[in-house]
Amino acid sequence: MNAHPTFTRRTVFVVAGLTATTLALSACGREADSGGANAGASAKPIAEGKATGTLTVWAMGAEGEKLPALVKEFEAANPGAKVEVTAIPWDAAHDKFASAITAGQTPDAAMVGSTWMGEFAGMDALDPTPEGIDKASFFEGAQKTTEVDGTAYGIPWYVETRLVYYRTDLAAKAGFSEPPKDWDGLKAMAKAMQEKAGAKFGIGLQAGGQGSWQSIMPFAWSNGANLTKDDGKAYNFDTPEIAEAAKYYQSYFTDGIADKAAPAQPTTEPDFASGRVPMFISGPWMMSAVEKVGGAGFKDKYSVMAMPTKDSSSSFVGGSNFVVFKKTENRDSAWKLVQWLAQPETQVKWYQQSTDLPSVKSAWEDPAISADDKLATFGKQLETAQAPPTFPSWEQVITSFDTEMEKVTKQNADVGAALKTVQQQAESIGTGQ
Image (cartoon, rainbow, N blue to C red; front, side, top):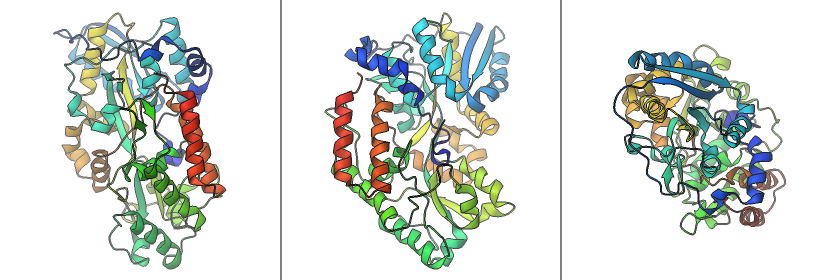
């Protein structure tokens, strides 16, 4: 489903979401266009006592396959409850949810992509998060992915963020014993990888196309960019902060440090293992991927570094959320399941079963996670990582950004003109709220 899995494997892209449902709703001006039926709503508390009854749950991909084993512990702690998990493929998930919402036949609870929240909340399908769930326990950026028009729906279930992977052995040849801290340092290191360490390209960067905003926006956020204006009510792409970040990103391609003709199907793992491209930006799942290709001992030949600073260091926070649907007839039990999934000890068990990183900050104190230096760097970056706005139209608008950035990287198009185009299209589409 993802055009560039190296950079985007675990983040939900809703190209499918640009299909009938989204476009139709946007065009027709649905009820949610007035701001969401539950704007500012406060949810009822969760009733006391154990969960009871049968709960239907949908989950996607590997999570859908592994969740049944995890919830057996929930069932054991709540003998009167049974959880029936339906695993659905990612590429069919969005439309299945949209159809179920339209038909009023949603499950009780479900894993949903964080970028679907605005759309589903706008369809009045989600139950607001009860006060009994501590929203402050989650990474702030992840928590914001659950919030639509001032109301939280569900929890951030698991998270991921993006860091710079680099070969430590080749960095030493290039004259770097420590990772750089800022933009100039990152570029100098990538260039030195070519000139002194035998790399064909200093760093692998996505040359535009679907999902490339996740590689570009960390630089923009680190430069103080804000994707919204007018008190968070409008898109804000045409800004000096984003322009400077996009020009910096473009310079890697114009200077020949990054490959503007990289294959559509990335070869990141073998290129990284061979040293052909000894740096790239991606998420935690690439640790096991590069170590598998690199073979025994390769884990000691690379490390990860935080996104380099300009004004600060920030990155993208992705992952998936877990929600309760409004149509559920077993609301309290559904929320008790979600509440259980958010417990630190449950999050650690889920990490051990799935390698999904915990969204609850205190879970990162467990030795199963804190003892790994690379994971700890991901955890540190999550403290400042940011998410895009939860506007229902986000997936439509960001497609324009990805398209324009491909012109910037591959055709050396003018960054200012590209961002003006994105802004004009964003204003034409609107936020959907």
